[in-house]
Image (cartoon, rainbow, N blue to C red; front, side, top):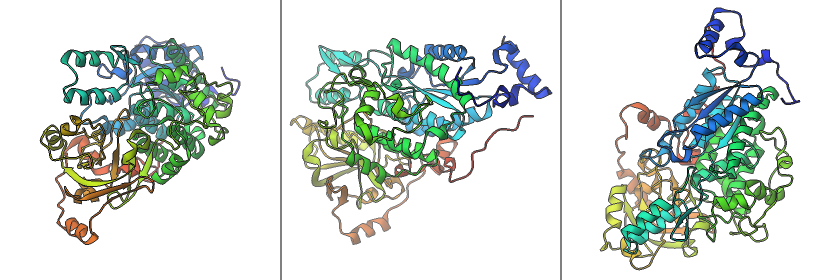
Length: 581
């Protein structure tokens, strides 16, 4: 047990449920005994909730059924009482139209599960894209000591002697299949070879990005986000999380002592240095807001301009390196150590030590995978924020992942109002399109999607694929998978479904991207834009009832993090401790 104990057993939050000699506590204790437990199992012990996002439809978390036992072992070793609480899984693979629709539902569930049960601390088990921000957002609002257990990336893919990366190679090989260059047998081989173990995507997609952000924020054990899911070290790390959370309860090491403006800034810098997913923007804005910390798109753009990309990992990397290689090269600890004084090393982490202390001894074992600051993959960070008359509230692009010739580009728009309309057109080999055209998909934002789906990496038209083209400028109010690449402008805000300027764009209008000056504009006379705005008609809501209806009424726009307005600290105080009678 820690030598930093600040609480006594009587001070434990769970003592309100179990300790008083009254009828209510009799009921709580007798129900535990109903499940075969003895008073020795819980008396004077911190109750540790293990929020498990395991599901048989979530391959990223397929190992969590076993890992929860490893966490429990660690809790027992440190004298705690572990209890598993299953939560909604919001897997990226099978949840439609998008798991983003349910991130806030997971956050609400996590907050209320923690608040309404006799939990002194929690271990958050997540990894698939939306589970990290959803769990962290809920736990930040609940306020009890927490530690995040990342699912870990899967092993690198392999087919016919070639290294395959999650998502990135799916898009690449699909283009080749559409061009007639991939046989049925080869396609099945790619399907079976691209995902060879449990764990989340092993490119620097959204899952790897968000677990890295959680670690850089101080919410994980040092190095935890880099360990591959099937590695024995992942089992040991899970047990260590169980041991550590018990000490965190005794030390009263609560989230507000860890998640500070400095730690949020650290996590954003690390995100930029890793070549992060564009989805990091919307999640970081939401997580910071839950912690009552001001973070804006402009803040992220400024950090992107000053932070070089030093993780040479696909899809932004220059070679075939994946998360497994990153782990062998030293992992996130080594990358953070390489960033030097760009990070505030005085911040406290879940270890109870400063970030600087946790980075002592970190070594880069392969300086092509984790580059020195003097030899970055890309001179700036992963993301850039655009403004202009098409996106007055902002849009996001990943400069390092797009063809250099599209940094400053203008061409005629080819506009689609729905994904089915777009998909039908781009598969038409007779489509009137050139490499200079700008593909535009609208009605795909938080309300229009609905739920802000990952449709933003619009497929290259088949006519251009057959001519050998593999990139072109694309714009949408959607998101895209963090495993994606290309000249894709995303998160256009305000979205077209609520009358944002993207709703007023017409096929043939000239669109201009000036990445150096962070501008995205339609070259249309302002009087004409106003005439179109006056003629625009508001569409019908996507949902008439249920959770979707609530989502539509309360979700904020992309530039605000897409959280529910009523869950922000500005809306009101957290409900606090429940009454127990």
